[in-house]
Image 1 (cartoon, rainbow, N blue to C red):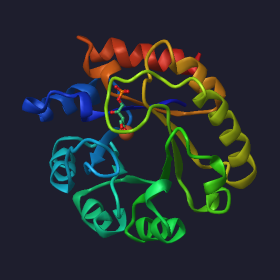
Image 2 (spheres, helix red, strand yellow):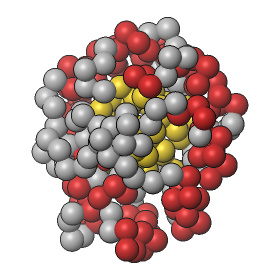
Image 3 (cartoon, helix red, strand yellow):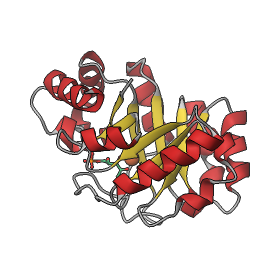
Image 4 (cartoon, helix red, strand yellow):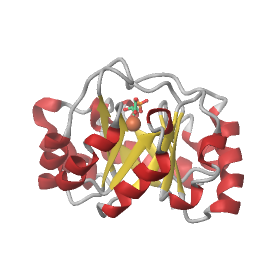
Length: 218
Ligand SMILES: O=C(CO)[C@@H](O)[C@H](O)COP(=O)(O)O
Ligand SMILES: [Fe+2]
């Protein structure tokens, strides 16, 4: 079953509560929250207080994508704020195994995010520690970028790796997901699809989420 995860990066922040209710009523499965620090990525967004605010208005799982240096220092604050899933970038974690354990011990489901240039080999020996792997199909930092085609090959290779090492882990794909790209991403083995601009920049979230789901599941 496909999981559609609208990324609030493209939502209208003057009415975030309404935007969250709208995507929830339109059939979204998770809410994706992009945390950026202006260091690991060239953009700054929001922190635990926004996660806490989202928790008050939606019952959907909150999926926090940490694009920050030294994530271990602030992971407890995101857990306390109500994160259900937390992904950290392999590129920011010299002690990745320890950071994943930290997330799990806080009662949150851990995931690892990989930039387009980062090889799958960096998760080979920690794959059993993961609830999900986030394949970045754009360079992280901004919404509305074009899908990088080589991600398809990477998702297929990840499917093979997880079939051996952790068949229960979810493959999540983030960046440039829309009605044109989602089908090939699903065929490659992904089941969780993050979409920001493709959802929030359209007039009818019901139609858009239904179309994405149909294309992913067909
Ligand atoms: O993590 C990121 C960007 O770094 C994403 O979650 C974006 O928010 C996706 O935006 P679209 O490509 O779907 O517009
Ligand atoms: Fe993201």
